[in-house]
Image (cartoon, rainbow, N blue to C red):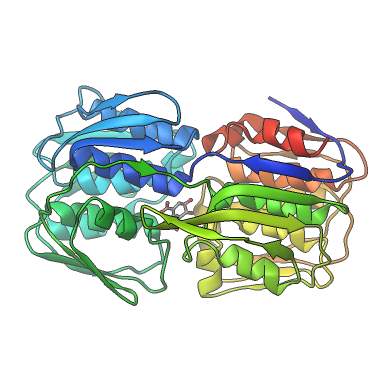
Length: 426
Ligand code: S3P
């Protein structure tokens, strides 16, 4: 599917977005191994989170509802059933990496696979700790999906993550739920903590001391009602659209503002963005609130070190924004971007150049000089949802009509993206 994007006069209105992808995955997986019913409201509409639901169903868990309102009937830590067929994680790194932590503890063999992009993403990062805990996992060429997981009674370990990754942290903590004793995960920098918050909501015993998380094994997890806030990483596209296009004024309701995710807002505000959050509330341990944003002149900035890890999903759209700032945006310490759904350093730089925007690729990042103009162009998503959406935003500021090829990729996290964009950009 191709999408034609015309330049926008202004981005205005008040919008609501789908539920947070990271939180939705975690709620569905934990609900499956909790006892009793979990009602989830505002579950993500993204294909990734539906891959998780498909896997949970294939493991013998009843999931009622197909939209954003779900009831998951958990069967407890020992209630999953051997799947009749291979588990399909689709495009979802979170599904395969996090669910593997649960599969590793099951008294049955499972095989989990994904699409072409997922089949190129590295899995040693979860295979190593799970093997240390006692599971046997085989992968294509020793590192890529499909994974064949021979579950076993697991033992607790202390594991220092070599790279910051909330998916790997979650995988080890999920495995630790089934192990006797205390599982400890030590992070190099603090990554998103939705797993820790969600596990506590379900009743797990978990202690967090800076970057060290200690989880007691074999907790009694109890199903409960949960509400998913809207996804800040999806909101990022509209925030940047409003910042880029003169005359814009936008409000985004009920967005997840967990402090381990909201570095985006601090970074934008630090460059001079006019962003307001009138009030915050806490639901199920997660902060959320309305974000108000208006077009702003931005200085530009550098994303490196721990900030890179905190902004990892937002870097494509921030690189786009960089071209319209005074001093540009430099991204460093972001080699992880090369192993996302696409090599996002290459796909971002390639599309920027097609728009006549200068961008220098570094082994671990990008330099996008400021004060540049976007020219209309034919752009590719390369099948990557965040690339499709980042360049739809860039196209709003171009001087003519642009085209995004394989625009359907946006559905991986945000099926309503094109409709929502149309509604606020005239
Ligand atoms: C996620 C963690 C990040 C992020 C991904 C979602 C999560 O991946 O890029 O979109 O929900 O835990 P890594 O764990 O690979 O950093």
